[in-house]
Amino acid sequence: MKKYLLFFTFPCFFLFPMMFVYQSSLFGSPQSLTEENDYGTMGPVSFKKRSLKSCESLVSQMNTSIPTLLIDVEFLQMLEKGSCETCTGRPIKIGVDVKHLSATWILEDPRFEVLYFTNESAKDYLDFRSDPRKIIPKKFPTRWVGNVEVPNNIKMFVGFWQRAKFAECLNLHIPRAGAKVRMPARPSSAVLARLRDELIENEMFPFLNGGTLLGWYRECSVIPHTQDMDISVFAEDYNSGFVEEMERNDSSFMIRRKFGMTNDSFELTLAPKDGFRVFIDVFLMYPGIENGTVTHHWVGGVSPDGTKYKYTYPVYDPWCAADLHGHIFWVTCTPNEKIVKEYGKLWYLDHLTSKYSWNSSGKNVKRNGKWTKEQMKEVYKVFK
Image (cartoon, rainbow, N blue to C red):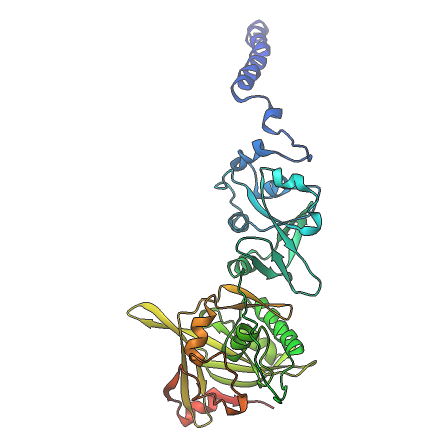
């Protein structure tokens, strides 16, 4: 028996080396699949084999000697799903701070498509030198994989990037001899930015509307004689958890008024608990649907007697970003169209707030029914 076992085992010592040589001739040596570039990281060869790598290993292979920000939306979405098999050999988009402009070698790295950005301390956004220009909030959670900064909340970051196209304001000179300043621009913009951040934390993307949109577009500022600020949130994005936070006293804002229902003419008037006191109206914006198609958008209002009002706009497109005294806010990409609809062809002329009626002066407002006395107990609440 030992004799036969010896004859069977002996050829195997030759068989295994022969198999290894044969495999190497077909697939190449292991080193040929993991060549390194000049920066000590995996080069283009390994990127062609992404389907064999985990998402995390792909991120680690993007490491360089300078800090980078991973901004490639397609890759981030695959990273969130934990499925990077479909990632092709295309360059991955990364952001690089302009303070690293001298590191020109990164522009030659075939792994990357580089977008430089500025990060000014006086502004709360990153400003990308892209075409078109893009800006995104600088405040979002990240983690580091070597020198690669990766957004933690990918859904939030994708929302930022989808709304990043920069929109310019006109900076018109508006003569206002003797007009009283009720709303100082810088402190009121700072408070509005605080509210923006809390809404973002609650997975809502607010955008400028009404007089605040007009002030930004017309004069790159806040209308000084206005009595409040206006922002909107799409009704389908509304998160009631934010109101619950304020009711639990877990927010830096408090509710002063709450009108309507979440499915009809909902409006909040908020004020900060500390700092500069400014009232901010937050409107839910609803889609106007005709024959199954969204043909317009609208926000609502209600008077003390229960009369409802409807402010209609062309289909809203708040996918652009603007600067208001160093703060990023989202705005419609077609501001002139929306402003003409609401304020008419003479929108570039100043109209004193004291002479502007909220429920009749607008060109886009009309009555929209009336709440009953019983309904008013629920839909019209004013808090001290």
